[in-house]
Each structure stands twice: as structure tokens, then as C-alpha cells.
Length: 498
Image (cartoon, rainbow, N blue to C red; front, side, top):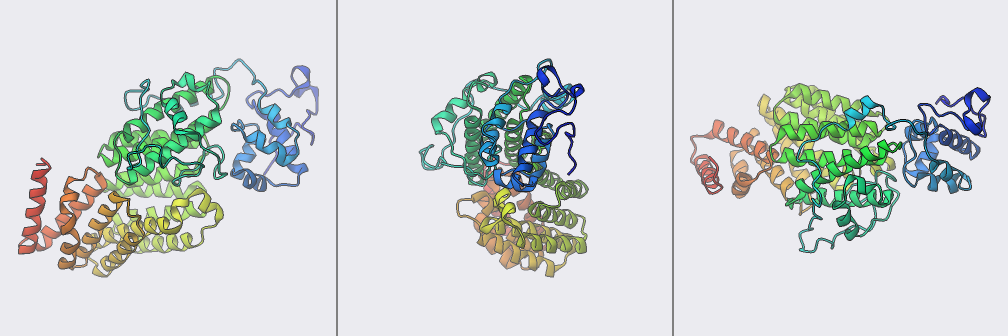
């Protein structure tokens, strides 16, 4: 990579007086962290490390190290303290990181960028004292509180998978009662770790169908963290960690709204999240958010938009194996909606090949694509693609492959993930129906009919409607199907549905 800060010699000093400000210090201009970056580059080279190697040591992608060295990014809280001993800097980087920034600007971000990143948000805004710490289903809200990050597949926005310690629940309760202005007085690293731990709890609660208060808490934290980011930016520091945290919470808020069938608000949160993730170079969140947008438009059977988002994911970073594999899965689902069998099957094959080749960095960035959870998610996506393809083409061989993939996904599903189990059970029944096996479809669907009808999850409702239409269209005159339809009507009447 080319050296952006060419004005400095290896010791990080300016080459001529025209490039220095008062006292011989480099004039920062539009790069308020140029001096820190130049010294970091000099120390890294002296240590004989590449940007990639240094990034691996501190849990950062090499492109972020490049931007730090170019003076385009503020070092995250605590990063300089970790770099000093690694590079033998004797506290020099920590001192530079703590130096006051050049005054005279309302914020690090340009006014236009600031307006985009801090645009109005959905909801009622920050509510003083709003948000609660979720319970873990045991009646003791603190029982499952993590000790370290990553936790529940949520990694630290400051230190990636470095194993940072997490503050006590009481500290996080205090954070929820703070104002955005008040958060500036809280130790930044502790606050980021606390909010990240809370994100893991809320995410797990949603996956296990224990969401009371989760949407409200997630959106309260979002307003709080975005307000905090605005305060940090106004003080002359780039709100890198805050924007990454906001992107992750926006994804959860978008998912929770999507589950309620509130597509417009879900889209708003996901779009905000993409902007925040892009501004903070968070490829992990960008990929995940694009995946959720694929899901959202697929519920409207918008294959063209689903494919656009999936291809955008593929273009994020082809060097990351997990991003490429995930993009293949989403492209397979989009091509299935378009009834393009060859492309659908090609992307399924590429996804499976890519997932089998994930390396350690892939596992650290996307642990949810590894092990049993990874197998469950991958086969669920494959099953959905094959079922959609079979439903449109009438190809029973494809439907049978969907049955196999769905059964494989169910076999690797954790017992407590009740919403996913219900969805996959309906998909299995629908795959049997697409394969022409009515008896198997009814055997699978009948035990969960009441639960499915009462579900408020939009994706589950989508699966139920597809199954219902196929059963009634193909076998509506048979007594077994008439009995099934009667159970659906009875369950709907009990739930007060039309």
C-alpha cells in the first residue's frame, strides 16, 4: 500500500518547515490524526511488521491499520495502550492519542456527512430512564450475564475477539439511565463493553422468543448511542466505536420490527445501520445488514432487490471467506425466487464449498457460521432456496433435496431457539408438500398448527401461508386437508384473528 503521509521521515518528523505548524508540530489540516499515524507507521516498520501482521496482533483488519497510519481515523479507546508495548513505543502512542485535537471545527465529520449519519431516527427518541436489562428466562436477570466478550456471537466493536472483560449488570443499568451528554463522563471502554454485553443478551432473548421489552430497550439504546456519537463528534473525535455499536443495535432493531411485520420501520433501521457500519468500516455489520435487507424484500417476493443486496454483500470484501460464502447463500435464495434453477444450484454449491474452507479469522468474525450453529443456518438457507425453486417449478426432486436440507438444519438447531424451530418445521412440511407427499406434510404440520397461527413472527406467518396455499390448492377436496383447514380456522378464532 502507498504511503499517504510522505512528508515525514522514518522518525515521523516533518521534512520542511512549510509542512509544520507552531512549535514544529505537523499541520494536521483535514487529518487531525496525521502525527499519530505517521509515528505508528514508523514504529511498525521498525518492528518489522506488515499492516496485516499488526492488525492480527490487535484484532483489526489491515485496512483500518492503513487508515490509522494515514491519519484518517482516530485510534479507538485503549488501542494506543495496546500498541505501545507491542511496538516498544514507551508510551509515545498513548501520549499522541491523548493529545488535544485542533479546534475550530464543529466535529471531525464534515457537515454533510454528519447530517447523513445523524439524521432523524424512528421512534420517540431518547427517553430518560428508558430500557431494561432483559431476563434470561430463569427469573434472574443477572444469572447469565457474560464475563468476557465475545458473547453469544457478539464481538467487541473496539477489540474484536480479544477477550475483553465486561462490567457488572449494575453498571449497565446505570448506562440505560444516562443521557447522551452524561455518557461522555463515563469511561468509554467500559460503556462500549457494557452496551455490547447487553446487545448479546437482547439478541439471544429474541432468538429464544423471550422478547418482552427487547424492542423498546434496543431502540432506547440506539437513540442513546447515536446521541453519544454526536457528542463525541462535536468534541473533535471520530465516534468510531459508537457508530459500530449503533450499527449492531440497528440490525437488532430492524430484525425485531421485521418480526412484527413492520417492514417500513425495519427498513429505516437497517438503512441507518448500513450508513453507520460503512462510516466505521464495519464489514461484519455491513454484511449482516445486507442479509437482513435480502430477507425483508424476499418477504415481498422482490427477487430483483434481493439479488442486488446479495451481490452488494459479495462485493464488500472478497478476501473474507465468510462474506463470500454468505453472499452465495443469499444469491441462491434470490435466484430461486426468479425460478433460475442453474444459478440457484450453482450458488448453493459455491456456498457449501466456501463454508467448508473458513479459516480462523472467519470464525472470529462470524462465529455464527461455524460449528452446529453454522450448519443450521447454512442448511436453512439452502432448504429455503430449494423449496422456493421447487414451489415455482414443480420439480419434486428439488423438493426432496429441500426436505433433506431442512431436516439437517433442524438436527443442528439448539433446543431453546423456539421461533427458528417452528419456522423450520413449517418449511419441512411445505417441502414435503412440494414433493407431493401429503401424508408427510400433514404429519409434520399438524402438531404445530395452533402455535404457528398464534405466532406474530412475520417470517413464520410467511411460511404458514405458503404451506396452507399448497395444501389447499393441491388436495383441498381431501378429508385430511379439510380437517387441517378446520384446525387452522379454530386456532385463528381462538387467537381472535379474522
